[in-house]
Length: 261
Image (cartoon, rainbow, N blue to C red):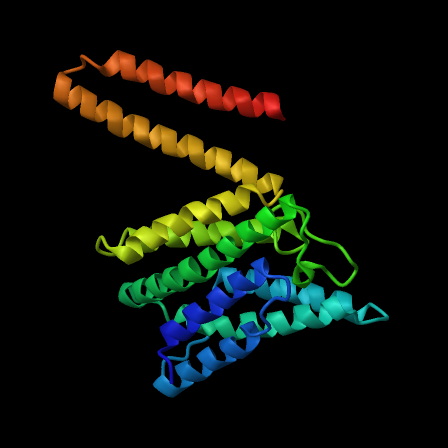
């Protein structure tokens, strides 16, 4: 039997991967149930009761009330109910991560799984984009209604795909920062770039906004690091020139983005 932290990390990873591929991964609820059984077997099963759980329960109650007042149960509703069962089984597993050491193990394993899986999906997405620019369409990515996703997205909902790529980027960066330099670190850095490019080319405008804000934050962080080093090393001799360079770069990026919209 898997350690419950590994089982929970796999459950979340499957959920994120399911956002980015055309057929989804109908394993969230079964994996959540398996994690629940792992907790029972190890005697760590807890049922949390707090404000957050109560708010979720209230939202679920209103959803179920809406279903009861409806005269028909749609296929999407069935999927929602299945997901609600998975969430209900996941909450005790999250409550079991009360110790910092347990949470760190869960986070590290989730980052490793999402980094590699979503990174490889990003590679497939860029290959699909390259083929699309040549007029080649892959039948596996065509939705049942005949819609073919544009850009690098593998699914019709570009925002879902872009969100998966964002999770992949953060996971790759988190994982590579916590391992020794080597082949795995190089590959993860490459996959981080791949997922960023795949997200940008996915046609999701929300991702573009997030990417622009992230770039500005990176520029600000780099500016503070660079300016701090300049002040310490040269006693302010390079402070103003470097400040001018960073401010000018920021204005160019912001201005270009503004004119592009």
